[in-house]
Image (cartoon, rainbow, N blue to C red):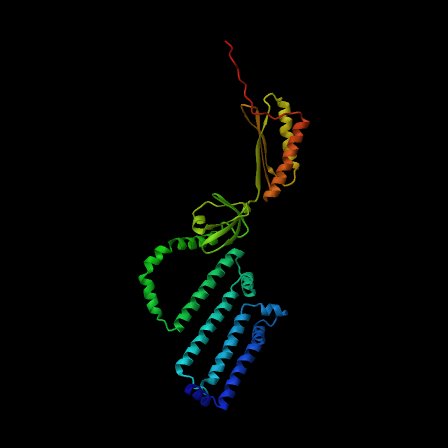
Length: 355
């Protein structure tokens, strides 16, 4: 009861008015935080014609948070003298304000380091080297991690924690951490090797051991591959850096090769005619590289005459390659039919001795 009386005596008319003013400050800052943020960003993006371009910028929401917190902090500073806040209490308020400000700034800065950021796009466009999206994205991920690490260190220091003690503790447990993080370090190093050597990029069709499919993403630890069965496999970067990787997307041409086996009793003049017609057909066929055409009498097998047919097509896409291959096969069958030449079958002749 005595505490209530003390509070009533303490809250004079002047102090009540001061509290109302402080609350109004917080409400007004909250209401106008969006407009203030918009105006500040507009100063740096004066050439932006669309409002969404500003409201969707990386610093818009973090700036709104900062302005709101700044309004609350200003209200506490305004009430410090009238309400006689202690030094300890104000120190806590100041520390919380600084921590939230650091977090808001780090979030805005990390969002600026994305592939969609206009700043990043300008830097990449002005770069003398051609950088792939996967390489840029990997570098941006590293930048975002460093931003958050620096923000965590600042927050820890603001909380009054002795960083020297933490560093010393890390030194004592360094051996354990190193042993536990060996695989992570290998994968991280493997990720750097992938981006330096560039054996493949996001969107490429690769084959590595038992895995084959399209690369969807490359992270610090692993590479995500979408297989042709529409499943997703995450392969550690360390495994990829130590393995032979076939990048089918880098093919400039694809080989068409097979052996056509004709019957052993095929006349030589028919054989020569079939060779010439197949060679001519391949030269006239679209997407076939002329100087790569080979149609030769290869070997005499157990079942017939083996005719080697080999050429390269610039239809490197798998589906288009299958279509070209199908067209060539149909034309070869048509030539054999017109020349009345038959293919040989796998047969065996068995002689039985009745004696």
